[in-house]
Amino acid sequence: TNQRETLFCDLSTATELMGIVQIIGEALQSQLTTKEAIDNLVKELSFRGDVLIVFDNAEHVVADIAEMIRRCLFQAPDITFLVTSRVKIGLPEEVVYSLQPMSVLEGMELFVCRARRQRADFLLTKENRAIIYDIVHSLDNLPLAIELAAARVSMLRVDQILERLSQRLALLRGPLRNPQTQTLQQALDWSWDLLSDCAKSALAQLSVFNGGFDLPAAESILDLSHWKAKVEVLDVIEALC
Figure (cartoon, rainbow, N blue to C red):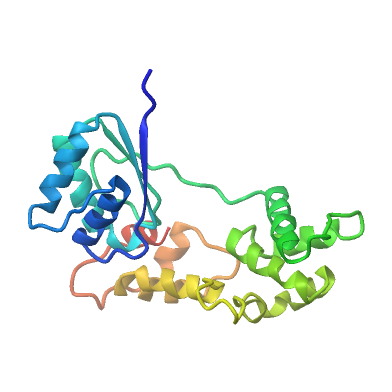
C-alpha cells in the first residue's frame, strides 16, 4: 500500500488567506505567487491523492482556514485536514477532538526532561519526588508553565521553585537571553486577544467566581444587555470554553 503523504504547516506567522497558501506552497516546495495561487494550489493537491495536511496554531486565522479547507474539500476530496486550534473552524464536516490536560505523572516526566536540559545531572529522587509533584500540581499540569518552571533549576533548587510559585508570572518569565521564548504572560495575553469584545466582558464578569462555576451560576450574574446584538449566555460560555 502507498504511504499517505503528510504536510505540516505552522500558521503562527500567517495573517490572511494568501499567507496560508504560501505556507502550504512551501510545504509542497512550490512557488505560489500569482493571482491564481489558490486555484493552482488546490489543483496540485487534487493530483496528489491521499494527503494529510496538518495546520498548527490556527486560532487567529480560522475564517481563512475554513475558506481554504472548503475549497479543497470540494475539488480534492481525498485530502484530510488536522487542525490544532483553540477555536472551532465551523465547517459542517468538522469533527472536534478535545485534548485533555496532562496527568500529574506526565507533568513530572516533562519537568524532569526539561530540567535535564539545564542540568545534565538532574534526577528524579525520593527526596525531590514529592516537591516536583507539588510544583506540577500547583501549575495545573500546564506544559508551558512546567517547562518554564523547570528552566529555573539552573539557579534554584526545586524546593525554592515551589516556594516562589506564589508569584507565578515573575518566576515563569522566559529567560532574557532568549527574547523569542514565549512566556506564560505572553501566552495569556495572546489568548485574551483572541476573544471578542463581548467574550472579554463576560470573562471579566466571571472572574468574581473562585474555584469554578456552572452554567446556572454564570447565567445568574452575566449582564450582556449593553451589546447591540442580542447575545446568549450559553453561546458566550461555549466560546470561552
